[in-house]
Image (cartoon, rainbow, N blue to C red; front, side, top):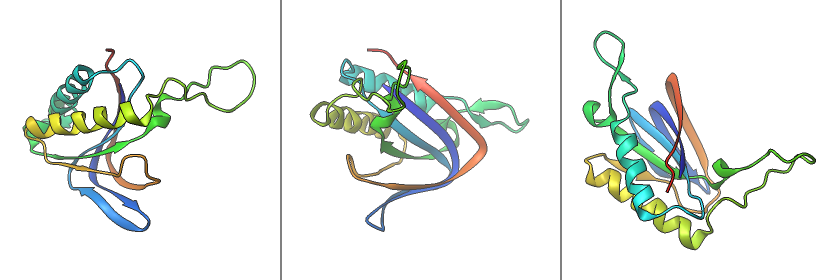
Length: 149
C-alpha cells in the first residue's frame, strides 16, 4: 500500500458540495492499494502512520506521533497514488498496479478500522467518489510511505 501523509491544521472532504469528513489538527492520509496488498498490509501501514514521529516536541524536533499529540486523521482513498508514468512514450499514467474496487475498498476500511483501534479519531471520504479535498498543511510536512505485502 502507498500513502501520502500530510500534517494538517485542518482538512475536509466534500462530495457533491457536501462535507462528508473533516478533521482538526492531525493528519490527512491519502491511500492507495495494490493488487498484492492484504489485510495485514493495511494493519502494518496504519500502525506505522499512527506512530510516525512528525509532530514537534517542545524543542521543535520531530519527536511526537499522532498518538502522542492526540490528533485526528482524515483518510481519503486515492488510487492515482499508484500511477506509473515511466513509459517510454506517451504521457498517460498507467494505473494497472491499483487494486480493483472489490479488493481495495475492504483494505481501505481495514486501514481505517485499525487506526481507530489504535485510538485515532478517524473521518473518511467516500470510497470511489469524486471528492474535493481541502487542507491547511502544517509545516508544510508531507511524507510518502509504502508498506510491501
